[in-house]
Image (cartoon, rainbow, N blue to C red; front, side, top):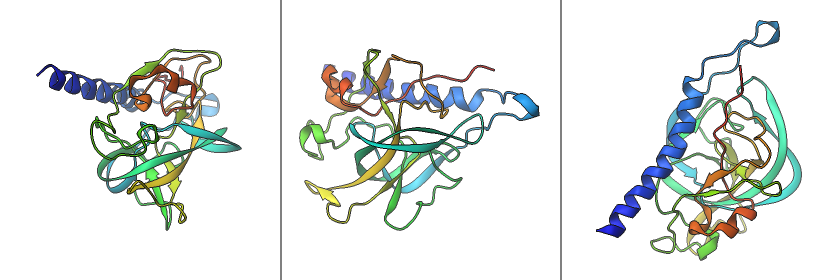
Length: 222
């Protein structure tokens, strides 16, 4: 009974973390900018089909830059990281005007998927050799404390591609997602040394230093 209640609590926390960020973006009023332009409005939609779920992944710097759609219009370049993420079939939420999406749930091309989000307590992950069932794939949320040398990777609504040489790990379908280091859900830089939530690491704090997937709930000032 106690374990079941804890599991429900963890799922609830995860949904609240993402849901609050989404709500803040959706209901933030458009803000006028110089020249009379207004900020872009996030386009949150439910998508059906295959998607990458990166919430429990860690990532590797590529040394490149990646363009990210911003809530203020246009794009902004961030350091890029590659993240190996499991492929899930079902309903997920996406921001069609965020990440590097282009206004549609349709895959960005043959052999590609979008990294979107679905709240769930279990996600196959490298930490436990991609075993696709509980307890090995448990993905409870935790908060990584802010640190000047600690960064997260934002992978929500970014493009991923299938590696033909390794489409499965331990029978789990995976893709490589190309994501932004230190970007907020609004496509703007996070404040330095921000704390952030993640489902990576199964509650173990050392994962916070391994470029885990996360996000910072932060809205640009009017």
